[in-house]
Length: 346
Image (cartoon, rainbow, N blue to C red; front, side, top):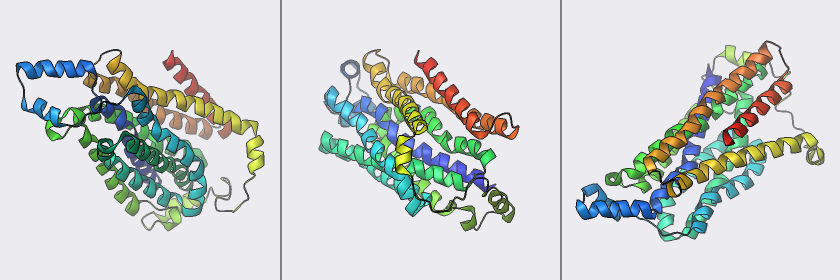
């Protein structure tokens, strides 16, 4: 069924974008080696230098201050926050397919430029990361728009879960994979990790261009039966294509809107704080080697993968069995997810 292929492609896009976003969290450990790692390497070189270790000395490294490192790591989120607010408006005018394609291609190009920018200036790297964040921030509203066009109310939670599954999968695969690539000195070390994820993003952009269509009506490959099935719920789901004026004042005054904003912001802040800061903390404070860090960071992704799919399936099951209506079901799932995150923090 084509709607599940669309959700799968959305997941692939999420996977690529998220890999390009979090790869630096691991790579920066090699870009700015701590004293423990340098001392261990120097001892080895003194006793018996291998070819890979000699090549390691030729791979660029930088003596950035702690403040500079933190600015580099956080820069992407400044750009992301700005463009995420504009993503919905841009999607409404240009369509989700074009916005996601632009986001994916832009992020791929900017990711490939990171090794070059790091060698030029840390300030240039920060600017590049802000631009990367702006490019990535556009895709979220666009992806929700695509999934809304290709889903029906009682399947939407499942399709959204599949679409966003790539984000959790990236945590499982990207962290140990980045460690392996950054440690592969004969292949080029940490710069290769950025080129690798950039290549993944470019290939995915090509697939997205030829496989995905904005709506089922535009897709020449979808069966007429599936088109009729999706159209059958248009009236229940609200007239999607009807142009309406946005009640901005009512939105800003809505307590429900601010409740969602506060809850989502709190959850995302805690999650990305762990994802961004944990690798450096584990390396420099706990003194774990980089390979162990990669596997430790993937554990969070494994748990998230399980619950990402289960939550959507459970939500649709509750709605289909008419145990609860859609709104209370979504509230229940949201409360459970926030509670689980708090337990993890403890």
